[in-house]
Length: 183
Image 1 (cartoon, rainbow, N blue to C red):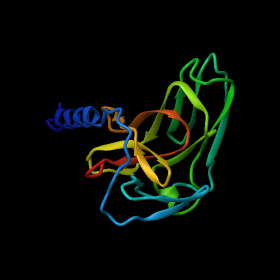
Image 2 (cartoon, rainbow, N blue to C red):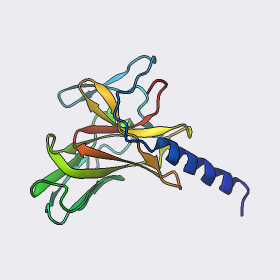
Image 3 (cartoon, rainbow, N blue to C red):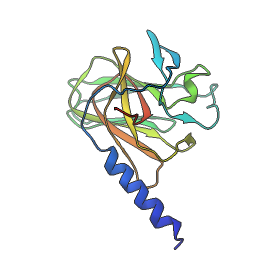
Image 4 (cartoon, helix red, strand yellow):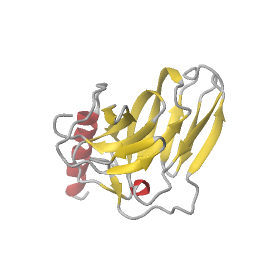
Protein backbone atom coordinates (compact mmCIF):
# COMPACT_ATOMS: atom_id res chain seq x y z
CA UNK A 1 0.00 0.00 0.00
CA UNK A 2 1.23 3.46 -0.89
CA UNK A 3 2.36 5.44 2.22
CA UNK A 4 0.35 8.49 1.10
CA UNK A 5 -2.97 6.64 1.02
CA UNK A 6 -3.36 6.18 4.83
CA UNK A 7 -2.44 9.84 5.32
CA UNK A 8 -4.98 10.97 2.70
CA UNK A 9 -7.69 8.76 4.22
CA UNK A 10 -6.91 10.07 7.72
CA UNK A 11 -7.05 13.67 6.47
CA UNK A 12 -10.38 13.03 4.73
CA UNK A 13 -11.78 11.44 7.89
CA UNK A 14 -10.66 14.42 10.00
CA UNK A 15 -12.27 16.81 7.52
CA UNK A 16 -15.47 14.81 7.59
CA UNK A 17 -15.54 14.84 11.39
CA UNK A 18 -14.64 18.53 11.58
CA UNK A 19 -17.35 19.39 9.07
CA UNK A 20 -20.11 17.56 10.99
CA UNK A 21 -22.24 20.15 12.67
CA UNK A 22 -25.86 21.02 13.11
CA UNK A 23 -25.13 24.69 13.62
CA UNK A 24 -27.08 27.10 11.46
CA UNK A 25 -25.31 30.44 11.55
CA UNK A 26 -24.46 32.95 8.84
CA UNK A 27 -20.90 32.61 7.53
CA UNK A 28 -18.75 35.71 7.87
CA UNK A 29 -15.74 36.77 5.87
CA UNK A 30 -13.62 39.86 5.56
CA UNK A 31 -12.80 38.94 1.94
CA UNK A 32 -14.23 41.16 -0.80
CA UNK A 33 -17.67 40.06 -1.94
CA UNK A 34 -18.07 38.85 -5.50
CA UNK A 35 -21.62 38.52 -6.76
CA UNK A 36 -23.34 36.48 -9.39
CA UNK A 37 -26.88 36.69 -10.67
CA UNK A 38 -29.32 34.27 -9.06
CA UNK A 39 -33.10 34.05 -9.39
CA UNK A 40 -34.54 37.11 -7.66
CA UNK A 41 -31.27 38.88 -6.86
CA UNK A 42 -27.55 38.42 -6.43
CA UNK A 43 -25.51 35.76 -4.69
CA UNK A 44 -22.24 36.30 -2.84
CA UNK A 45 -19.55 34.01 -4.26
CA UNK A 46 -17.09 34.58 -1.42
CA UNK A 47 -15.80 31.18 -0.33
CA UNK A 48 -17.99 29.20 -2.75
CA UNK A 49 -16.10 26.25 -4.24
CA UNK A 50 -15.28 26.47 -7.94
CA UNK A 51 -14.97 23.90 -10.73
CA UNK A 52 -11.56 23.58 -12.45
CA UNK A 53 -13.05 24.15 -15.91
CA UNK A 54 -16.27 25.53 -17.30
CA UNK A 55 -19.16 23.03 -17.10
CA UNK A 56 -20.98 22.23 -20.35
CA UNK A 57 -23.70 24.89 -20.55
CA UNK A 58 -25.27 23.23 -23.59
CA UNK A 59 -26.13 20.12 -21.54
CA UNK A 60 -29.05 19.59 -19.18
CA UNK A 61 -29.11 22.29 -16.49
CA UNK A 62 -32.40 21.32 -14.81
CA UNK A 63 -34.28 18.15 -13.94
CA UNK A 64 -37.53 17.38 -12.14
CA UNK A 65 -39.05 14.25 -10.69
CA UNK A 66 -42.34 13.58 -8.91
CA UNK A 67 -41.68 12.15 -5.45
CA UNK A 68 -44.43 10.18 -3.71
CA UNK A 69 -44.38 11.41 -0.10
CA UNK A 70 -45.03 8.00 1.48
CA UNK A 71 -42.21 6.36 -0.52
CA UNK A 72 -39.53 9.07 -0.66
CA UNK A 73 -36.91 9.02 -3.39
CA UNK A 74 -34.13 11.03 -4.96
CA UNK A 75 -33.43 13.49 -7.76
CA UNK A 76 -29.95 13.76 -9.29
CA UNK A 77 -28.29 15.99 -11.89
CA UNK A 78 -24.57 16.02 -12.75
CA UNK A 79 -23.58 14.79 -9.29
CA UNK A 80 -25.91 17.16 -7.41
CA UNK A 81 -28.48 15.07 -5.57
CA UNK A 82 -31.25 15.25 -3.01
CA UNK A 83 -32.32 12.17 -1.05
CA UNK A 84 -35.79 12.42 0.46
CA UNK A 85 -36.74 9.85 3.11
CA UNK A 86 -40.21 8.29 3.11
CA UNK A 87 -42.60 10.62 4.97
CA UNK A 88 -40.31 13.68 4.78
CA UNK A 89 -42.57 15.47 2.27
CA UNK A 90 -45.97 16.70 3.51
CA UNK A 91 -47.53 15.66 0.15
CA UNK A 92 -46.53 14.19 -3.21
CA UNK A 93 -44.28 16.84 -4.79
CA UNK A 94 -42.39 17.51 -8.00
CA UNK A 95 -38.82 18.18 -6.92
CA UNK A 96 -36.45 20.14 -9.18
CA UNK A 97 -32.69 20.68 -9.25
CA UNK A 98 -31.50 23.59 -11.40
CA UNK A 99 -27.85 24.40 -12.07
CA UNK A 100 -26.84 27.94 -13.06
CA UNK A 101 -26.65 28.59 -16.81
CA UNK A 102 -24.47 31.73 -16.81
CA UNK A 103 -20.67 31.78 -17.13
CA UNK A 104 -20.06 33.11 -13.60
CA UNK A 105 -22.29 30.90 -11.45
CA UNK A 106 -21.92 27.77 -13.59
CA UNK A 107 -18.27 27.57 -12.46
CA UNK A 108 -19.37 27.45 -8.82
CA UNK A 109 -20.62 24.58 -6.70
CA UNK A 110 -24.15 26.00 -6.53
CA UNK A 111 -27.59 24.52 -7.20
CA UNK A 112 -31.21 25.54 -6.78
CA UNK A 113 -33.40 22.90 -5.08
CA UNK A 114 -37.16 23.43 -5.43
CA UNK A 115 -39.95 23.94 -4.64
CA UNK A 116 -39.03 26.66 -2.16
CA UNK A 117 -41.17 26.94 0.93
CA UNK A 118 -41.85 23.22 1.42
CA UNK A 119 -40.98 22.33 5.02
CA UNK A 120 -39.86 18.73 5.44
CA UNK A 121 -41.15 16.52 8.27
CA UNK A 122 -37.60 15.15 8.57
CA UNK A 123 -34.46 16.67 7.01
CA UNK A 124 -33.42 15.69 3.49
CA UNK A 125 -29.83 15.08 2.40
CA UNK A 126 -28.15 17.21 -0.28
CA UNK A 127 -25.07 15.93 -2.08
CA UNK A 128 -22.60 18.03 -4.10
CA UNK A 129 -19.92 16.62 -6.44
CA UNK A 130 -16.31 17.40 -5.54
CA UNK A 131 -14.75 15.73 -8.59
CA UNK A 132 -13.38 18.48 -10.81
CA UNK A 133 -13.66 21.09 -8.03
CA UNK A 134 -10.73 23.27 -6.90
CA UNK A 135 -10.36 22.34 -3.26
CA UNK A 136 -7.33 22.84 -1.05
CA UNK A 137 -8.39 20.22 1.48
CA UNK A 138 -9.45 22.94 3.95
CA UNK A 139 -12.76 22.60 5.79
CA UNK A 140 -15.85 22.82 3.61
CA UNK A 141 -19.57 22.67 4.26
CA UNK A 142 -23.01 22.96 2.70
CA UNK A 143 -24.54 26.41 3.00
CA UNK A 144 -27.94 27.89 2.12
CA UNK A 145 -28.38 31.34 0.53
CA UNK A 146 -31.12 33.21 2.39
CA UNK A 147 -31.85 36.79 3.35
CA UNK A 148 -28.76 38.03 1.48
CA UNK A 149 -26.25 35.82 3.31
CA UNK A 150 -24.97 32.26 3.45
CA UNK A 151 -26.28 30.14 6.35
CA UNK A 152 -24.06 27.27 7.40
CA UNK A 153 -25.59 23.78 7.47
CA UNK A 154 -22.38 21.94 8.32
CA UNK A 155 -21.80 18.79 6.34
CA UNK A 156 -19.27 16.10 5.65
CA UNK A 157 -16.97 14.87 2.89
CA UNK A 158 -16.89 11.16 2.02
CA UNK A 159 -13.63 9.26 2.56
CA UNK A 160 -12.71 9.44 -1.14
CA UNK A 161 -13.12 13.23 -1.15
CA UNK A 162 -15.57 13.06 -4.06
CA UNK A 163 -18.83 14.15 -2.39
CA UNK A 164 -19.96 16.80 0.08
CA UNK A 165 -23.23 16.11 1.92
CA UNK A 166 -25.41 18.04 4.33
CA UNK A 167 -28.98 18.10 5.55
CA UNK A 168 -31.69 20.72 5.28
CA UNK A 169 -35.25 21.24 6.53
CA UNK A 170 -36.35 23.02 3.30
CA UNK A 171 -35.29 23.86 -0.26
CA UNK A 172 -33.54 26.99 -1.47
CA UNK A 173 -30.28 27.85 -3.25
CA UNK A 174 -27.37 25.85 -1.82
CA UNK A 175 -23.65 25.83 -2.32
CA UNK A 176 -20.48 24.11 -1.23
CA UNK A 177 -18.34 26.60 0.67
CA UNK A 178 -15.10 26.84 2.56
CA UNK A 179 -15.59 27.21 6.29
CA UNK A 180 -14.50 30.82 6.65
CA UNK A 181 -12.90 32.43 9.70
CA UNK A 182 -15.60 33.48 12.15
CA UNK A 183 -18.09 31.05 10.55
